[in-house]
Structure formats: C-alpha cells, structure tokens
Image 1 (cartoon, rainbow, N blue to C red):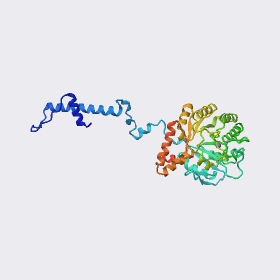
Image 2: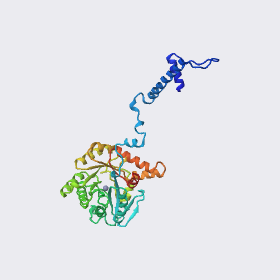
Image 3: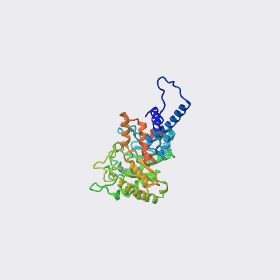
Image 4: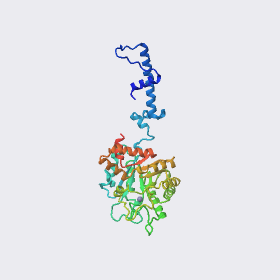
Length: 386
Ligand SMILES: [Zn+2]
C-alpha cells in the first residue's frame, strides 16, 4: 500500500474523506483542511510504521537483530571466541633425510622436511607469531620399519632429534608430538598386531605409552596419542607419573578420531598407508556419535588434559559434544589434510575465495566449541591475522 493511498484509507476509516477541490473551485486549503491533513498524515505515518513492523517481525520487538551487527566490530563481537595465533598448532612432517625439503603433491604448499631444513622454516614462522607445532616423523630410510615400530622412539630418529633441537633453538615454541606407530610399522597399522592381523591392544598400549614417555623425556611439552587403542591415555598418564614428569607434560588425546576418506593427503605425506586392511576396527565410524561421546568421557576419566576431535569440519556436532562433556577442558580440533585440500581445490575451481573459506571453516570449528585448531593454514593465518 502506497503512503498516499494509506492516508486515503485512513480518512475513509475515520469517516472523514479528504475534500478534493471540484472543477472550477479554487484550490485553496482552509486552516481546518490543513490541520485535518496534518493530523491524517501523522496518524498514517504512525500506522505505516506499525503496519510495516507487524508485517516484518509479527509485532515482536525482540526480532530486531540487524542493529547488533551492522558495524564490522559489532559483527566480530557476535562470536563467542575469535581465532588468535595462540589457538593454532601447525603440523610438521619430519623425515629422516636430514637435508630433504620435498613438496607433498596432494597437500598444497606443504613440505616434508629433514631436520636441517626445519630450523630456518620454523624461525620464519616464529617471527610471524607461531606458538606451537605438532611433529610427525616420516622414516624413509629402507629397513627402518618393523612389526613393532621400533624406530618410533629411536633417540637418533627424526622426532626425538627435532624435539631436542627445537627446544634448544626456540625455547618459547610449544612442542606437541603425535604419538603413534603407524609411520614406523612395516604393516602401517597403529599398534602391534596379533597373528590374525588384528590389533593386540595390550602390547600396543605398552609400546605406545613407552614412545610417549620417550618424547616427553626428550622435551615435548605435549604428547598426543592418535592410535585409538583402548586404555592408552591411562597407561601414558601412569608412566608419566612414574617418570616424575606428569606435572609438566600435557596429555592431548585424539579421543574422537573418525575413520574416513579425509586422510589421503596425510598418508601421502607421512607414508603411513596400511599394507593391508584399514583402520575401521579402531577409528570411529563416521555415524558413531554415541561412541565418540563414550570415548571422550573415557579419555577424560583416564587423565587427558585436552580432548581432540578429528576431522573437524564434518564433525562439528562431535566438537560441540566434546565441549559439553569436557566443559572444563580445552577442546582441540584437527582440520585434516583432506579438508585442507578440499578448500584449496574449491578455491582453485573458483567456488569461493581461499582466505574467506579458511576463516569461515575455522569460525565454524571455534563456534562448535574448540579453542585449539590444528591447521595446515597456520602459516597463512599468521599473515592474515596481522
Ligand atoms: Zn596411527
């Protein structure tokens, strides 16, 4: 309804139609006419306002939301938490070829590096505000892998040497080490196997907790078991206590780690493809929300300091569950290699802008409840957050 017809409509409702000049009559408004018109217009404006409001918000004033986020700063206030540099952990793939620096084809802009290439690279990121890295060892030397993953805690292996070197060179860098056997076992599974090829949980937990303690003794600030064997959080915690170092080593559990098809580029990078079978017997099924909740509660009760959910973007409900169940713990989310590669592929195909989607995906992760994000976008975020 136009404003003029609204005035007319109101006049009719009032039973006092506006007097239009007839042909030949001078179009001179009387004082009464003008007063009447003003009154009609004023009432019409008030009516129009009420009508428009009732149309758009059904009369409920609490529906007026735009005012809260019309300014960019006010928009940022709408987030419960915003990405900061200290929330980011950057994955580093460290090979046993000390001078190697090789681009990982399926993981855009990511390299596998030998220990001699790590220092200058990490140094450049620290200048930009890098606070934390997570280390993955990649043994490439022939004959290194065996059924027990012996090389995982080799004092001369790439992980332990890198922990020691980073601690010495960058005393303020927080060092997380992934703890698993799959990079080091000849069969590529995350533990020690029985003859029938299934995981021997007890032997695996014994071995993995030894590896975790070795990394902690080498100087890791945080050990993060990703193997998914039952009971490994408790075993690691007890061994750290026995060693007298539990008070200074954070135990971050990959509590809810789902199997799926988002790890392909990582396995390229880490050389950890299983030689037979898959990891479905120990990683969670993608639909297993209840199972994830049980795993999260279990690992909290076994002594985890941080709960991790992996992957992140497809499992935001699980991150939210982790925050609910672990209300008093920091929650970490790993935006895995497949998520990262998908975002790059989408941007390359012109579907969206890379930077905008990197932020949007991370905002979703934070909104779900995480305050720690393991991300291959870390180097870019260090620039973008400036
Ligand atoms: Zn593994």
